[in-house]
Image (cartoon, rainbow, N blue to C red):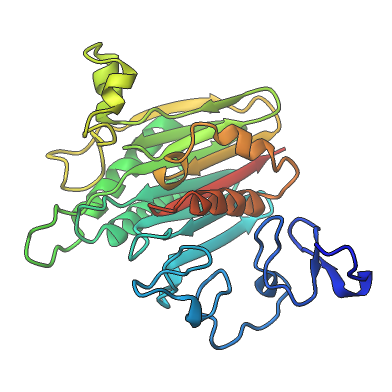
Length: 327
């Protein structure tokens, strides 16, 4: 920034507090869109979420500034929800997909906190509807259950099973060239500092605190199966075309209801629980380093920052990041 500028021409970025020119649309430090953060109405010619005008749209519909597709007017292209100061989620269609086939659902019922993230299978029909139905159905099951005789693992199994049936009921249309509806699934129910998890596919859950960072789920994938069988090393498996193929998902893509996987995790102290689709974790195995860079930020800022990271790496897939801050 020009050292000759006077302080009267500077403002503080509302996200990172870096000094910026009053006329700037973006913060050079964190990339924040200042017009949106400061509540300044956007120009009618602004069509991209980053703030760029229609004159910066290339011949294929991508923004020359940030690489995203220009907004289509579909609110699901980018959604943010702050359910409480401790719980928030962001989902974005990314830079290359025509629509967002990820979905999420957040809920609070008494002392239970519920988070569900689903990633519709791209090669299947109606993946956006499948993922949203699965997320909403699972949240409903987890919120409504009040029978004390039902343990948390059984309840999570029921939520996954009902979500699977909901996806199976999605009506197929078209010429039949696409696979039937399908979606990955990961859900967390937090109660009395116990996290109950259920998942099918490769959407993930992580725990982060000052002492440890760990993945709480293990993908249902061809890669994991072949490596655990001893038939290939990790390096050999990663070089194969099926390396990122999933072996479980919800919906009629499976011949029968997926078994899913389930576990419980005792929260050791203050930290963050994070659920995400592969639109985030596919870019890095070092998510903990990214989270540690924003130690004091509220959950919505953590989710935004991780989403922005994935977009900055190319945003080849839909991105969903849900964050729960535990004190």
